[in-house]
Length: 321
Image (cartoon, rainbow, N blue to C red; front, side, top):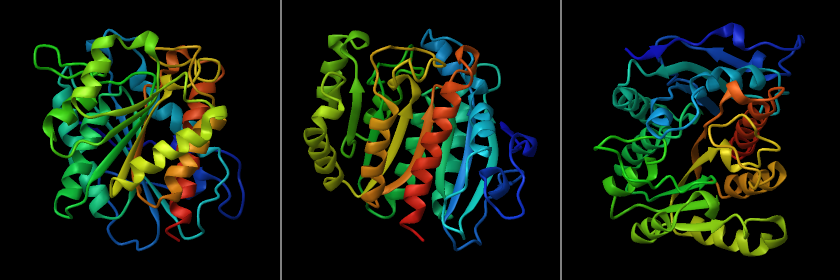
């Protein structure tokens, strides 16, 4: 089994008699034994300690260490989720040799089971090929409910590249999801940078019916237009899956990624988008991908990734309380 049990020692921080920090509220669970009893709001954390997709896409290696770097910083954050909330850490799914596809299969199954047992899944990457496995699990969950999924990817890249010799990689997850779900693929990519997406990818985006906002337009002074575009997208679907690629942020705030760029969005703007998505009550799952601790500075990127996960979880679970 391509699964590693969580390491409780990663969850540490300040001591207090009451639950005041995430490390105190997080329960480490072995063997993917998902909680199906708690009727209270709950988060299910699952790591993807894999970088085969990044390797295939000629990116900088090191993302396999991402999940634990995020956990270390999540644990130190103050706990402001609803009092009855529960956080479960279900460990990591890893890749053996170059068999990324087997890792994806287990991730998809686990995401499906997390949703079926009423968790809010937060997946920690790992390469962005994670989105293919994550998306598959959500599509399966919604299929029996006849609900339409919308995918919002905050990213410098479309990640709509074709597969290589039939194999996926960190640049192809949404292309593969589009191929697998041609009649129901609803995709909005925010923060696309023209400098790293050739014209062919814009053509691919058009061919699969994707929507997007380029980085030049994805700025605070254009908020009314951005808000309208996001709200229109939210109205067209039943549920939302949010994927946050850390390389979408400016490298001034997120240097520790596989493909850094100085021209990305700022954290306070991204969090404004998070709040809008959470307020819709349609957000059912998220992932944070492409953190590469090998190139981080003073844990700036892993701290930011942890803040993204904490903020979204807090906003989503507050509406479920």
